[in-house]
Amino acid sequence: MTRLDTLLSLIEFWKDRNIDGVLSVMHEDIVWHYAAAIAPPVIGRAKARRLLESLAPGIGEVRWRIFDYAERDETLFVEGVDEYVSSEGRLVSAPYAGVVLFKDGLIIALREYFDLSGVTRMKEGDAAPPHVRELIARNALKMGETP
Image 1: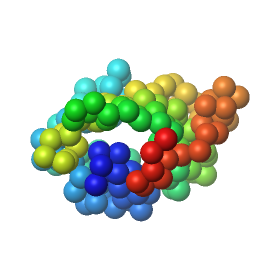
Image 2: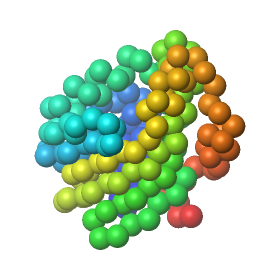
Image 3: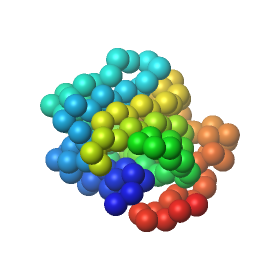
Image 4: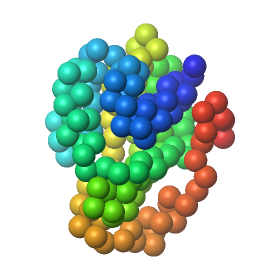
């Protein structure tokens, strides 16, 4: 399995809210910057589990997609959209960039960059602005696919 396939499997696990599956592709010593420029990282699988358990109830259908990627050594760079329907039925579409580091085939570090204020507005009921809709209208990569 490639690094991209590992990340895509994490996404598939999360679509099913399979927290054990998500954690199975994360290293025990994961350093997860869920909101890299905004909040301190979650460190370790136990804390990652708590974060996932806190996020899951507010999320309905998950439509998280990756549009493009690049690899260098043990690092995977991705561009995508973390898109989901909230438990209140509101569509939240957050374009993002991510940096994923690997050790022994597992994700040891994850840094996610996105506009939290835009996410907050969409959670409150605002629609994604036209420039965001344009960014996220692209086709997503599929397991084993290369651009």
